[in-house]
Image (cartoon, rainbow, N blue to C red):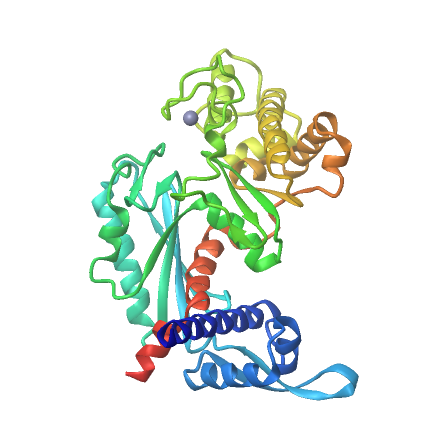
Length: 403
Ligand SMILES: [Zn+2]
């Protein structure tokens, strides 16, 4: 009976500590009394937790700040100078390694090109070296953890990426096992759409949202009450493989008529190219189809570009209507390359479809917007996930200091 009580007390301590750290993170700077009122914990409990967090340097005082009724109190913030994390974003042609403060502030970012058909073992070794280099270059602080956002459905219990286009060799490769070899810090792997969704919660405080990643692939990430809803094995949100036509072409996932087959950036390029091959008049050139050239063509009213872009946006909207009916989000955030071609044009098509196809009371209060974060949300989300793991349970940091 005694042992159980002490186990519970320890658990409560971890939960309270995490709650306080998370509130400081959300408030950026706040006082002990604000923490007490936001958390519902007694001021004495807050004082004890803050003493503990300050003794290991996770939290620092910022000086006097003005509070309620003219009272001045001491501000507290997370110690970004002492504790940092690493966020990595992997795409089909490049990977980025970012160094973040524990509060999610990005400090540095480096870009590494990945050549077409580069062997997965080579790329993984390069990512591991880049993380190692970041660790070596920042010995003056403690880098606590890393997270990497990757395209495609990653099943975390068996450490396998199930399928992904344009990244040969990555499917069924033990990514985490290879990346963590001799790394010395915990590393988390997450799907890029989930990372992007989490960035909207972490950096914009949106608690019920769906992030639709519309790029070379189509994906989505779902945040419910500030938590990522990833399913039992991390495979939730595979929006790209929901069907909009059960008689449609077979997809490599096994389904028919997957939305990714109709409205990814790659499909848009193929559709434009086939019309150019048929000698339709256009300002575009078949060997120079990029987001930039298509964007200019759409904005200049080029018929081929406008019609094809409109078609993919309209098909994507059908899928978005399905998402709204299933999950009832407050906000849908659209991001990635397809949205960058003409954000306003895409937004108007999606909004029209929602007005047309969703019951008025269901759509009341729903906002659809293009991702407004200036840094890539998938990279920001990777940094946020690495930091959130430490905030959820900083006992590993505290235990190291006690040793
Ligand atoms: Zn599919």
